[in-house]
Image (tube, rainbow over all chains, first blue to last red; front, side, top):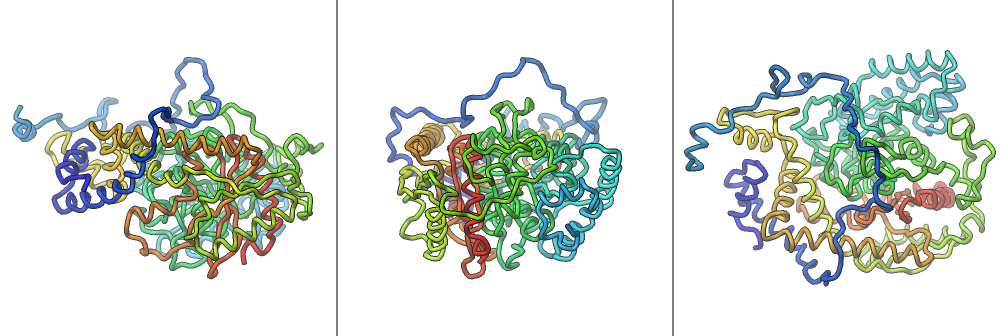
Length: 104
Length: 518
């Protein structure tokens, strides 16, 4: 199985997704099954093949290097979960509990 | 033109009628909402529409009527009701991407494609259901429940633009916008018996399309006819300084392709009038033995495997016979790397998605779940609560293939094979082939709940995903029915050759006539 339970928990942390134990087991199986279908690519010789990151035919047109104003019909506060004095308010970066978990 | 047969009216019939005062924008709005109510487009039945506001739409229609009466040129889509997939930002109605994480979110800006529709006189009447963040092929992954296929309510409408395809198939609007990353306009168009077009990458601005996989995403158009799809695409295509990947290549008048001539020969003295909608392009001439004279249609063997459903093969063979009877040459071709497209796509698209969807973190907009344990816990709680199972699966898959130790083996490898897939298309189109014809999907619409294995669901995209990887335009056109369910035929052309694509599509539609829906 190409993906282990530890892999799932690791990438879930990287992606900031909480995954409980039963779901981690399911995802281990699901991701392994999906990735097993990708193995076919390893048989393709791509040693001299350039990679493709985009398919904009003829390249992308250049435009003057000036900022474009963001025209918004409403204020940030109309959709932000929490704002004060024009700033987005978020929880503290770390609590004592976080600190003890990371050993900091 | 009578509003009594609203569900049969194309945009190209509605707009001249509205402009001439034979009907009013408000009548069109009322007809659209009545049709949605009659057929059960709301959440308790077909679940096609996620957001709509009849009073606001009527108010907009009244304002348009006043402008018409004052002699203002309203545009080529005057008074045409249009539905928009819920991942395309629109003012006035929410944009939720079929996700809990954006429940109730109303964008403070509008997508360029939507703004251009409005500038051409369209009336935006509804936001349509979709697979969450466009991740799916059945519209079963919506946080707001599955959409049902209007042609058989036991079946899915396809996805991820299932709500838009169903809205058009049900007669709620003649045109709808969808979006494509791997076939999400063409596949539901095929399942619902309508026309669905994905333009070349760069042809339509992505500004305001909520990003899934930015190197693949394109806004597309669904219509009941090729003519409506052409009119819709013509209205939204073209350069936009707000999208750095949009092309500044000229946009032809696609509807002239109905004349069955190559672009330089498709002259019409009333060209300017056509652009502003005063003089509809004539309907395609009855297909004759020279309609497609000189056109070479490629039939790629990889898209007609021995395992293909024999009934779908039969429908495709009938379409190919029509091409031949109209003077086209059908040539056997090969796109040898196409069988690798699904593995390539399901590495690249989740990788890009894992990055794009990082923005949904509960800080600036959308859902926030704060368990009171600091910022990181807020991120995790918000995203775990807000994203559904398929989105979670794809974010994790994308994170995995981009992570240290796997990047070269998966992501970089897939990017290289993508080059080979695009090379296959280039080779075919430079060998004298003007258009490629394939089935759009390997099956007809399947029952809701029938597919539970994720990879089996991914295989729905097997014939469509290559056009996204190569960036070329493609259209799905109805070519018949199997066991009373629609079958779509796909026409693919070279980069920015939408004109040739529409020419072949118009001819096929006219050549099949009523058989396209039998």
